[in-house]
Image 1 (tube, rainbow, N blue to C red):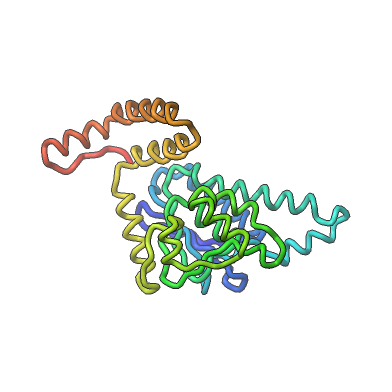
Image 2: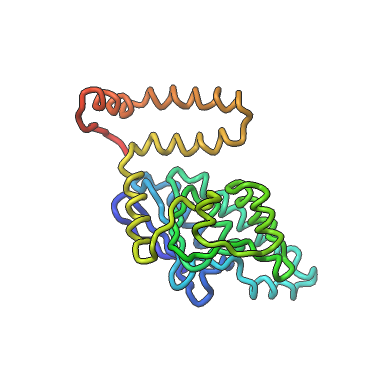
Amino acid sequence: MLRREDDGAVARLTMDAPERLNALSDEMLAALAAAFDDLSRDRAIRVVILGGAGRAFCAGHDLRQMQAKRQAGDRGAAGLHDLFTRCAEVMQAIPRLPQPVIAEVHGVAVAAGCQLVASCDMAVAAHGTRFGVNGVNIGLFCSTPMVALSRNVPRKRAFEMLTTGRLIQTDEALDLGLINRAVPADELPDATRDLARTVADKLGSAVRVGKRAFYEQAEMDLAAAYAHTGQVMVENMLDRDTEEGIDAFLEKRPPGWQQG
């Protein structure tokens, strides 16, 4: 269902339900939640890559499971509310992780799958990948995917995607800021790994504090954001490894960092 492979300081999570296009089933959501919980306490891992097995990254929610919930006496209201709550918790766990998370995307990333890409800190996609919040095409507006999407791309473009159900490809996704890089399909694993290793080579404590501050300041007004990040900079400067990094730069030598 979900495979984890560690390569030094980089952990790769692979959604492995290709027969369902890696849909966010109840089982997949539970597996992702557990994996993120484990990673949140793993100081040996500095970067996480999230990909999908088979011919797609993720096709969104498991519609068969969603329809099955309608058999309950309340026509599925409680079960569906629980599903969307659990999915939202998984999406919010990604920015809360101390490690940057890079989506490695191919095939399709639609509906909640597009939400998953938008929730990751960065994304690298294979040329020809299609993205969309296309639930409206079957009468289900992608309201929860809209939260992550509208925080990644310009509002009018997000609204157009949501109301037309149109799928976009990598060039447009790159232009909108939904992804960071688009590469040939056969270069996707290497390109994602290179980006992950570049980040993993930085001082881990600095990246952790920086990621947390990145999301915190985004929710503040301008003055509060500067006040908050100024204090973060002070704390970062007082880190012994940061002091060593600055000394090493001034002395033109590699830093002798003691912690990750």
